[in-house]
Image (tube, rainbow, N blue to C red; front, side, top):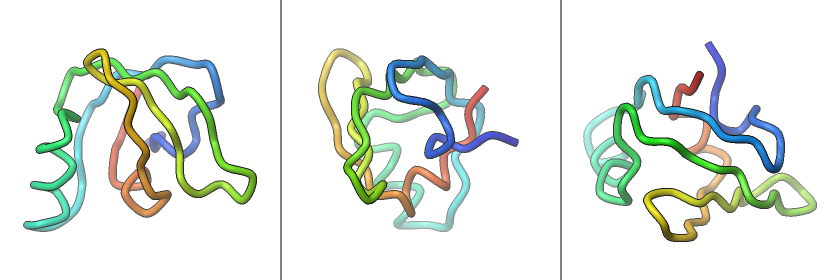
Length: 73
């Protein structure tokens, strides 16, 4: 299982599953991150938090804790 936080900068990944409970999972899905969507990792902050991604044509910053809940291939 590979998480979004493990994807190197400049690489693309496809979402396989979103882990988490209730409000956490719903918030991630509300941001446009759903099963099957392609994500491009744009930048990672110097200390690794947050991660900037490109999803569905817009820029999004995710906390490392949220990125750990997103399983990718």
